Length: 63
Image 1: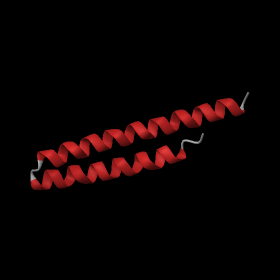
Image 2 (image 1 turned 90 degrees about the horizontal axis):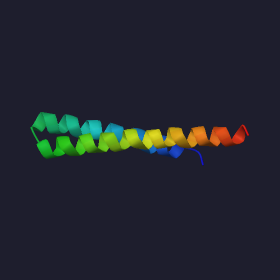
Image 3 (image 1 turned 90 degrees about the vertical axis):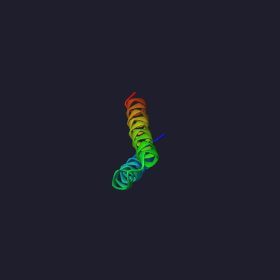
């Protein structure tokens, strides 16, 4: 139940989201900026899920 996969997906989503925001800002495209923000937030959530999975895995191994 490792959270590594979630952390990797989360980091990728954050990176792509930031890229979309940058392009949206450069082209004054509000829709693209909003999509980028949403994707970045999704990535942050995925990384937190990975952290929780890792903590749960560690806790079960210690007992």
